[in-house]
Structures are given as C-alpha cells and as structure tokens.
Length: 620
Image (cartoon, rainbow, N blue to C red; front, side):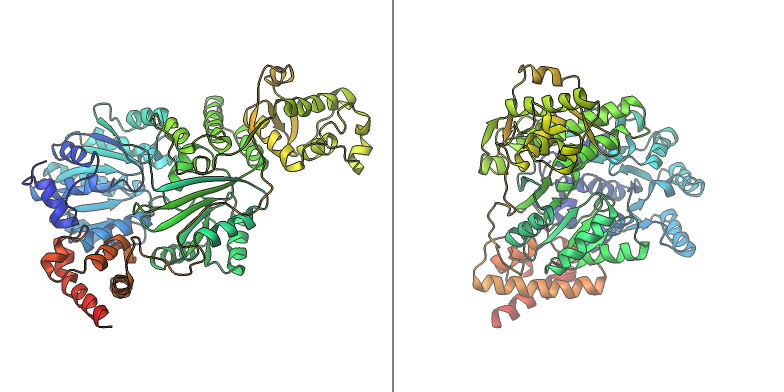
C-alpha cells in the first residue's frame, strides 16, 4: 500500500497506527475491492482492523454500512465503545435495548448515519431485520458482512452455535455484498466446514502464523491443584488480571471463594449465575485492575481486555482449539504472559468418559477422540510445547526457548517395564475373579498395600502384588495417565474401572517403548517473574523513576475518562500507549500524534488533557 492509499490513511488517522502488521494490508485491500475472505489470525493479531478499516473506506466511498455478526453482547459493546472513541459511527442491536432504541437505530441505518453495525446472529435472521437488509441492498447501501468467531458455524469446532447455521442467507439473498469470515482457531476439518456452511468456496483464505511468542506455555502435574495455582499467582502474577478456567460451576464458585480467602481478588463466572450478576462481574473484570476471573468456558470469547497477564486451567480442555482459544486471551497487548495448566489422571478419564457417553454420532465421537489425543500429547510432551501446538495447525516451527520444557527440560525415564507390570496386574484381576477395578486399587496392589479392599478380594495372593513397590503413588498415577492417554487402557462405567485396550497386547509383549516425564512431587510451580511479590502492576516497558511517575499520572487521568465515558480503561488507551507517552514525554500535540495508537479523534479529544497531565506529573 502506498502512503496515499485510503486504507493506510484510515489506519493512521482513525486508529493512530503508522503501518499494518503481517497480512493485514493484503486482507484489507482484498476486502475493500469487494472480494470474499476467510481470515485465520491468532487472538491479538488484529483481526478487527481487517474489517473495520474496509468498513470505513467503503462507507466513505458511498458504499453503505458494514454489518458485523458477533456472538456475544459483551464483545459488541466493547468494540462499539472503542470505535466511538476513535470517532467512527458505530452501534449495535441486541436484546438489552428497548423497542424505541431499536427503532432509532433502524432509522439511522436508513438515513446512512451508521458506518458499522454489530448484530447477533439471532437478530440478523429475524424477518424484521431481513426486511431492513433487503431495503439497504435494494438501494446499494450494504457495504460488507463481517462474520466474527466464524468457527461457531462448524460442528467440528470447539464452540458450535446452531444459530450460525442460518448465516448462509447472507450469500443467498445478498450475492453482491462481500463477506469476510474471521476466527482465531480452526483445524483443516473446521476450515472446510466454515467454507461449506457459509458458502465461501470462492473466498480467498488468509492464514496467519498461529504463534503467540509472548505467551509462555507451562503444564504441571496435579498434586494439590489449588495450592499449585495459588503459588503460581503469588509467585508470578501478584496484582495482575487473569482468567482461571474450571470445568464445573461448583468448582468455579469454590475456587473463587478460596482464592479470595488467600488474598486474591477473584470473582466467579458461569452460565448458571443470574444474567445481571454475570454482566456486573464481567464489567468489573474489564474496568478494574488486578481481578482474577474464575470461570467455565462460558466466559471469554470476544473479551478484548488487552492486559490479561495469565490464563490458568485447573481442568483439561476438550481439545487444542479450545486450549489455544482460551490461552490466547492472555497478552493481547503483545506483552509477556503465561498459559498455565494443572493436569492429572482424572482429567484424562473424565474427558474420555464425556466423549464415550455423548449421544453424538460415532463419526463425531471419533473426531473428538482424535482431538483429545492431540491435546494429551501436548500435555505429556517432554519436547517444545510450542512446536507441538503449531504443528497441530499445520505450521512448522523450531524450539521456542520460552516454554517450560525448553527452559527446564524435564528428566525422562523408560517406563516400559512399569507399564507392563500395571497391564499384567489388570489381566490378573480378570483371571482371579473376572472383576474390574479403578486406578487407586490397582496402585495399592502394585505397591503391596494390604488395605481392606485388597484383602477382601484376595489380591495379596496375586503374583503382581507388590511388584511395583519401587515406585511412588504419584509415579504410578503418571504411568496410568500415560497408558490411558495413549489408548492402551480404557475406563468403563461410573466408577472409572480400568480395562485393557486392544493395543495393550503390544505393550505387554514389550513391543512398545514408553518414555515418560519423571513425576514431580512438588506443589510450587517453577518460573521467574519480574514482578515477583509485587502488589501493583508495573509499566509494560522499563521506565525510570520520573517516567514511572508520569505513567501513573496518565493512568489516573485515564481512569477518570473511562469512568466518565462508561468504558473500560483500555478503550481510551492501552497501557503500552500510556507507557510510550510517559517514556517519550511529548511536549506538543504534534509530538503526541507521533505515538502509535493516537488517532486524530483521540488527539482532538484528549491531546491537551494528556499534555497537562504530563506537566503536572513533572511538577509533582
């Protein structure tokens, strides 16, 4: 793009950025020319600009309004607030608005006073809204359809939403209007499904690198997961905003309450909470600093908060797409962040059971098992986690030097003989009485413990009784976890009893080698942090004492503006923008305009206030 290109002019004038990043320029040019696109770009990669810039350019050229389909009210509100701060005529239609408010927005649409309109898929496909789109299309005032979180249309994806299936109406009813579908995660099968269901066969597919180099991936064995989480937060992220994912609503509430008793500002979030409370909790997370949100996967999609410094999982997600999407909510501002997960035997058992007991058809179950296997391989890996993660999305890479395995390569051991002992003991259970037992009982027999249950079933008489006394319970649980993860063992029934799988025969014969990580007995997580023990959030770049004083003054000013405008603070300016202001200490409006993220509207609205805040900080 040349310096005179209208897209570059919009990027600079409206958003305050000097240049596009990565493939953004090519995508924007393609869409401005009226072509369809499917964009796969990681969270924090700048997906929104790929349709927001074309929307403004095409609207200025008289081509009408851009309709953005978005699955969540919170996402719509955030993005509209950010566009309004930048001087763009944007709004949304959702269920929170009154009939009169909706009528006023429809009137503004007809009178061409809106550049970008966000709408939920449920609203878009109503007869009333379709009638409005028909009118706009007839007068050639429909500029672009942007379908955000496009993976929601695919049953193979990690967040299928049935109402997305109706979006094929866009191509069928308005064939001359270009469409751009966007998502952060989609494997080959999901991509093909998106293309088929949205009728994007003629669309150009843009795939950015899935690498998030600012995120450090770290997986620990579950010993005492809550205490491990607390150690991680206090050692690495005291005073930081973060998200902790749990599988059940009860675990969410219990974990949030417990963290609160340990001095962490934690709030629970799940779909079972009353809607107003959920909204209030989400607003606090977005507007306040240092809040840790403990949540089910009901929380997170579309959350634009840039300064989430960590995402932790207390339970194993269902697949790599879900894991990548959830961990990607950390570090959207590009600054160093952590993805931490505690993982144990129960996680493997529970996820496999949920798939097996699902009422879905067998093809879907088979696909889900394969996806789970890929995630288990990532969790069990003793080589670079980032290489494995990117390989799943078809992207070759080299060891990152920044994940836990790269920083501190784990010790491994040949667990082949231990695995044979475990499988042999299960075989002896069948021979002895034809019954199945769970992992706890198996470990007791292997370690030679004479519990009431072991004695009751006569298992002290088995040839395998005590043959594994040289290994600890933690080591044996790691062996069983790996055997289940690799499919050599399977669990059955509500008590998760263990049964030999077909492939166990090869292990018993010694034809398969098992190289495992050495089990850890430690509760504390390993890692280093520049803010260890800190209770206040440091600036995103290194600042001297005077610059730090300016930075804090700018944050205080921003907090007042955000409160006045009823938007999260980062909608006014990101921390990184304030830090650059504090570091460079601009003296004039022209100096201020040179800072990335300061567009014309924000310069006009806030320029003199910022210079005044900087002056007062210097005097103070």
